[in-house]
Image 1 (cartoon, rainbow, N blue to C red):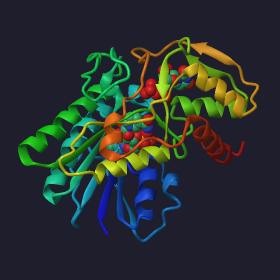
Image 2 (cartoon, helix red, strand yellow):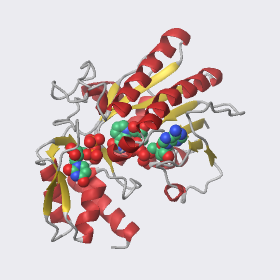
Image 3 (cartoon, rainbow, N blue to C red):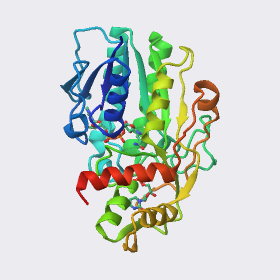
Image 4 (tube, rainbow, N blue to C red):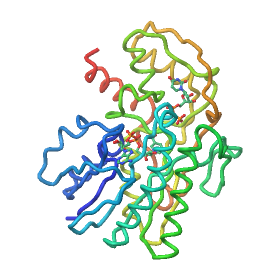
Length: 313
Ligand code: NAD
Ligand code: UDP
C-alpha cells in the first residue's frame, strides 16, 4: 500500500481522485484549505485509509510519516473566482509548487503537477500539442492563473534538473462532472443549473468560442496513469477529450437533455477568453495508453443527474 498526498483534495478533481485512490486500496492524505473545496465532496470517504489536513500550500507543509506520491491539484480553477483573487492564485501556484517540490525531495516522493491548457493562452496553433509554447498575455487579467501555472511548470523542471526530483506534469483541458461546485461559475455547471431552474442561459460573447470537455472519470484515470508511468516520462502531457464543441452547441445539448424552456441571453465576453481550444492527445495515447471513453452526451447525462439530486430540482 502506498501513502499518497492529494493537495487540493477537497475540490472537484481532487475529491474524485481521493475516492479513486482509496478504492484502489491506497492510503490517502488530503491537504486543502477549503478556499473553493467542500467537505461535502469527501463525505462518503469515511475509510480508515483516508485522512484530511487543513493546510494552505503557500506555507511549507510538514508531514511526519513517509509519503510515496504527491498530486498537486491545489489552485482555484474557475476563471471568475481566480479573477477575484489574482495575487492569491499566483501565490498558490508558485509558492505552492515550491513548497510541495521541497516536500517531494525530502520524502523522495513522485510529484505530479496539474497544469492547464491555459498555458497555451489564446492559441495560434490548433489543436494544441505539448511542443506549442503558447500565446499568453503576461499582463492580462487571466495571467495570475496562466503565468502561475507556467511558472510552476518551470519550477518542476528546474527541480528535476537540479535535484533529480521525480516529477510528472500534465496539462488538463476543461474537465467536468460530479463534485464540481454548482456555483463556481464554470460553463458546464452554470448551463446545467440555469436549464434545470428554467433561468436564462448566460452565453458569453457570441458563443462561437470552442472548448473540448473531458468527463471526470476519464481525467482521473489519466492522472493515475501519468503518476504511474515510466520514471523518465516527465511530461508535459496533454489530458483532455479532443472532441471540440462551441459554447452554443453545449447550451443546445443541455437545453434538450433537461427539456428546459430556458432561453439564451448573450453577455459580454470576459477579457482574454480563449477563442479555440482542443488538445492533441497523441502523447497520452502512445505513452499512457489513455484516451477518453465517455463522450459529451453520456457525461452530460451523468452530470445533469448529479446536479438534479444535489439541488433537489
Ligand atoms: P477546484 O477549485 O474544484 O479545486 C481546487 C482545490 O484546491 C479546492 O479544494 C481548494 O480549496 C484547494 N486550494 C486552492 N488553493 C489552495 C491553497 N492555497 N492551499 C490549499 N488548497 C488550496 O478545482 P478543480 O477543477 O478540481 O481543479 C484542480 C486542479 O486541476 C487545479 O490545480 C486546476 O488548476 C487544475 N485544472 C483543472 C481543470 C478543470 O477543467 N477542472 C483544467 C485545467 C487545470
Ligand atoms: N462561458 C459562458 N457562460 C457561462 C460561463 C462560461 O459562455 O456562464 C464561456 C466562457 O466565456 C468560456 C467557456 O464558456 O468561453 C468556458 O468557460 P469556463 O469558465 O468553464 O472555462 P475556461 O475554459 O474559460 O477556463
